[in-house]
Image (cartoon, rainbow, N blue to C red; front, side, top):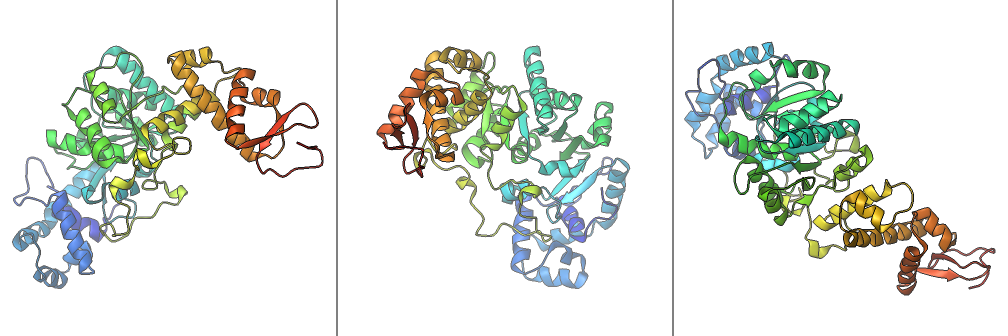
Length: 473
């Protein structure tokens, strides 16, 4: 945590934080997230920023413009300077830092995705830069069988081997198991807590990873806040917003935080693709999520295949600084009217071409299947693919046809050099009859053409530049 909070951060803390010291509670109710957002919008209209409220003259002038909030209440909250100083000292002794929405280092994903739902303050411990790395969010119910505990840990280990961040809620069950798997494998993890950050940073099992910079714990609520169901529900959206994709290990049906958070993502926010566990027996809750658009998890086994799950459907709303993300404004400003609306992150399936777009649920699944098929060594037969993906031969045959045709089109786009049927079959590691079926289809739709001379017959994309060695068709 910085030794000195920015003036903007100080004001946002005064307005929104309960500043719990021991058993004390704020005599005046702090602003809620929506109330603070409305205030921030009004300040922007006045071409002001939160720090201006620290100056008595500016404060009076600003408050005279009138707010929907009671002016007396704002005054009382802003006059809590001594209480804030005590709270800051308490947090500092526990290595807890504070980030406000006005700070440039506030996670870009949260500001771009959550918008008016963005927490005004984040409390945390550990390396804050991890919050901008995306990764895989793993969520699930607290009650978990031993087999699913091990499965969750294996997901964490795979995430670590892919050098990606594991994001979760830090609760018992799937959350802690996945985080434990990532950390014990030397990876990094972000825990988005709903309560008791002060206690969590002191736990022995967390200390080494926190000090090594591999674990970051954050909470949008006061570090001393106790558990509340509402807080647990609200923090779920932060877990999804910090990730590139999410995996639901298990869920109750139509009840509980896991179900509510997943449905909220599928039907309202749609920040990231939501996968559901497909390994082993799946309960009614996971089936219910699938009916709402969740995607069966293809159980990637390698870092490359996991990376495909995380990056194939990445949206511009959450890019790391290295990717050229838009930096947060120093001012705490609401989104501009030119920002893309939340419901435009994923287009309607009817507007997409199944062969070119991977944003529909079916396209998302096939994108991951393509990565897995790429990883198969040797001939790709229907039987082998069915066993490898644990699907029926009918489904394997359909995927294999789509895969080989997509690969053929991609290959013909990359080169003008004609290829024989045998060369193509060897390059794609498929049988002669399979390659002939795809070639016939592509000849019929005019994508490719035959080169008959010299023998044997070869194929190239239509309109390719011809050479002296091609002969005559």
